[in-house]
Image 1 (cartoon, each protein chain N blue to C red):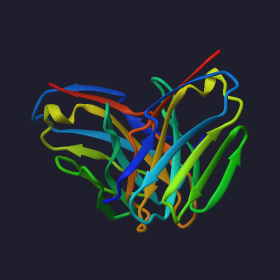
Image 2 (tube, rainbow over the protein chains, first blue to last red):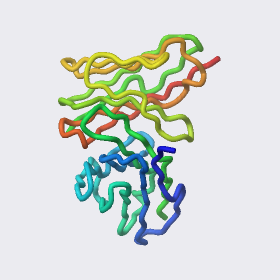
Image 3 (cartoon, chains in turn blue, yellow):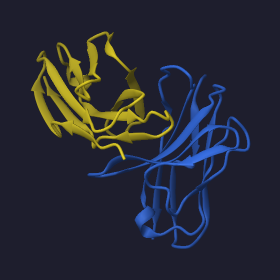
Image 4 (cartoon, chains in turn brown, cyan):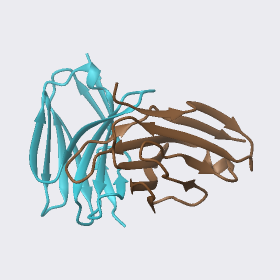
Length: 113
Length: 109
C-alpha cells in the first residue's frame, strides 16, 4: 500500500532532550516536506526537500534540522526541544515536475514539557 | 513571503446546500492546493491546480491567476463533508508551500 509513515504518533518529552521524528514513503517520491499545525495558525512549512541531499527552509525552520540521505526517508530532528515546539507535526511527499498531489502521514503529536 | 487568506473561517450549512470556500494569495504561484482534514484525522489532498477548473464528484475547484483567487465548491453538501478545508499556495520554486488557516465546515442533517 502506498503510504507515508510517521513515527511516533505521540511523543511526550522534556525541554532539551534531543528527539527525532521519522518519516518514510514507499512511493519513490522526490519531494518531501515537514509541517507543524497549531490552533489559529494553521499548517506551516518547516523544511522541504526536492531530492536526496537537497533540503531548504520553509517558513518556520528555527529549532529544527532535517536530512535527506535516502530518497524514502526524511527525518525531523529537534536538537534541543522547547515548549513552544509542542505541536502536531505532519510529513508529506509527492512527485515533482507535474501537478502531483501531496500525500500526508498520519501526524505526530509532540508535547514538550 | 506569500500570504494566503481563506474565508470564511467557519461555515455552517444544512445538508443539500451549495458551499463555497474562498482562498486568496498575495504573490505568483506554481500551483494551488486544496486539502481536507476530518476531526482527529489525517490530511487528504483534494485538488492541485495551476489554472482553470477541476472537478471530482461533488467537489469543484477553480482558480483565477490574474485575481490571485481560488474557490472550492461543494454541491449537494452532506454531513460527511464536515471537515477543515485548507488552501495552500506553492511558490514559483515549487517546493515552498504556504497555507491558509483553514475553513471549518459543519454540515447538519
